Length: 461
Image (cartoon, rainbow, N blue to C red; front, top):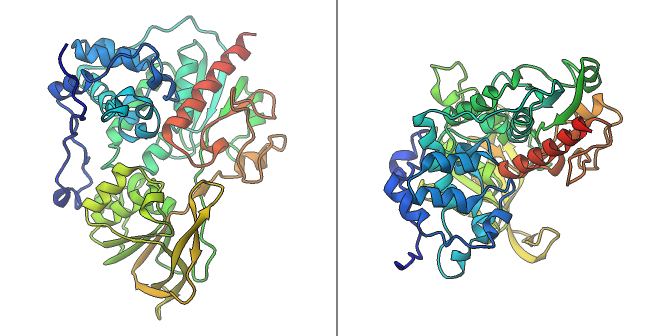
């Protein structure tokens, strides 16, 4: 038996200097030889710990083995038994903390690059033509899905593949939810999102855009139109703020608005798209998560010098390590152990400086990370043209406000059973960020899949 390579097959990507001014995808992807070499590192463990680490339970050893054997059609078929959005997951899921974290190879070397292999197989299928699964006889039971993000798309696909009549109601003019408005083109090309949405639609799912459930129509009105079950997957798109003086000055954006302008409204293609966005020469992004990295890297591509301000150290950055490294390679400046305490205007009422305070780390807090503590008398100012605040999001309250018997938590999230997605309102399920708060794409997909299974049982009982 040949010796197993303990090191991963590197992922080719654009050079940092070139990509820092381009919205083209950074990672180029494996060739077939690279994919086979990486797949051959899989030990095909009998206990399959990687499957348990996947929120949607993909049969990982099976799809990886099929790559080694050169049977890519079988490989993508195995993935799609559990996951209808493999091109998306292969790009943006934090595999390093989920399936890859459970890989036995990680005990002596690097884990198998499961996400990169999933991406390769999904991209291969897109060039060959999508193979449609066989569908059961129609149940003639109508299910409404509120929100066309990862949770809603997954629930819709799972229910359609069980024979149910599914309609997605999406508030925006483009399907995909956070996949289209939140994640930049250079991380997740929108042609990939559109292709996966089209696959879900090809299963018989109807998609209604520009429908704001809670305003255009209520959940109770959907029941009145014959829907037997409703799944709420509206995400967490309402921004939170720092609550410091000057936060309402001109030139200060929430990350949500900033990324919507760039990703959904295509401001980076101005004047081809009529959404201008001028950031100036100096941009400060506040926060340390994936959204902060996305905002910082977008601002860099718009021509600015970009500084990320984060109140803890690099070890506590919640963003994926890969995204932090990409940002550093592209010239993003990190001011760590630093926290904004005020924003100061120029004569026109636009932000001119960010007043910051140095921090030091104390004992761990409830999150398990060391608590940042202010260093008195350490205040300093950063000159700035634009500020992007990326300090978290919460769900929009529109649906709970229009559905009084739908219970919510003190954080504004919908209360739902974590095993089934059932809410306090009969016939209504919920999952994804609207329940958990801002989390990952794949965790939202896992919640959508669990809820779909329970909805199916409900409709058949």
